[in-house]
Image (cartoon, rainbow, N blue to C red; front, top):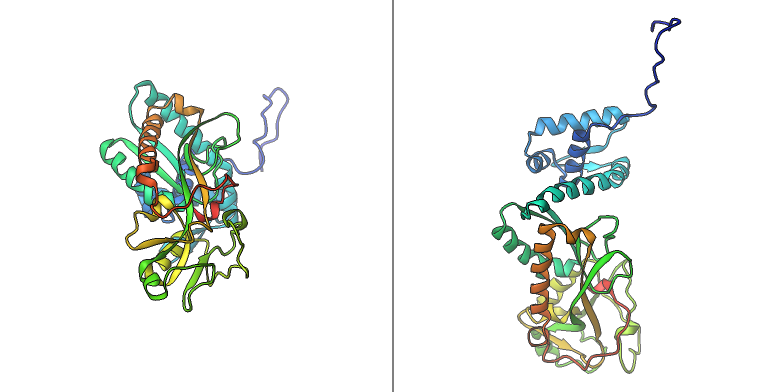
Length: 335
C-alpha cells in the first residue's frame, strides 16, 4: 500500500490522467511507420534499426492502451485510432521540419525536406521528373511529393508548395500564375483510323468514353454549342485519371486530357475541339515560409522555370485546339 502523507510532508501534484506522449521519439517512429507501411522502411527513413522502431510502436500502443496497426502480410495497416493520432500530430511534424529549415536557412543551405502537392497527372508527367533532377543536383535536399486531385491546405502545413489549377482565395499565401493550359477530348489515332473522325458526341461502336466514378465533375461548362442528345455514358468509370488515360492510349476509348500532357503522348489526336474545351490556369502557391527557406525557394524557382517553359504558347499549344472558350470554373476531376 502507498505510504500515507504525514503532516509537514511537501505537497505533490498528482500525475496527469491519461496516457503521456511526451517522448517525441515514440511519435516520430509512429509517423514513419504510418507513412511507410512497414517497420523496415520506417527504420530506413529514420536511419535507425527495425527493432528500435518496433519497440517504439509497442511502447506507444501500451501508453495509449490500444493497438495502432493491424499486422498484415507484408505491411502494417493503421487502425482508425492511428488515423486520428496521425492527423493530430502531423502539425508537430510540420513544426519540426520548420525548425530544421530555420537553421538551414540561416546558412542558406539547400538541406531538409520540402513537400510538394500536385494533381495525379501533373505529379506524374511534370513534377516527378523535375524532382528527380533536383535531388540529383542537391544531395542534401529531400522532397515529399503529395499526389492528390484535391487541394491540400497550405496554411495547415499539409504541403509547402502546391501546383494548382485555380488561384487560391486564402489570405497569407504566396501565389504566382505561371501559365495556362486547356482540357480537351482525345482518342488514339488507331481508333480514328478504324471509325473515322468524330462529328458529334456519338461514340463509335465498340469504343468507350472513360470518365469519373465517385468524384463527379460537371460537364456542362466544357461543352460548347449543341449539347449531346443523350447523357454521356461512361463505360469505363474510375477516379484514377492515369488509368483512364492508359485505357484510351490502348486505342479503344475517348477521355479528357490536359492539352500540354496530351501533346507529349504519341498517337493521341484531339477530337471535337470546337465542341469540348475548358481553359485551365496553372498557379504555384506556397505559405510565407518560402521567404525564409533557401530549400523552398530553390524548389519554387525550379518549378516556376519548368512550368513557364512548358506552358509557353509555342510548346504547350495543341495544333488542333479550338479558340479559347470563356473562363469557367475549374474542374479538378480531369487533372
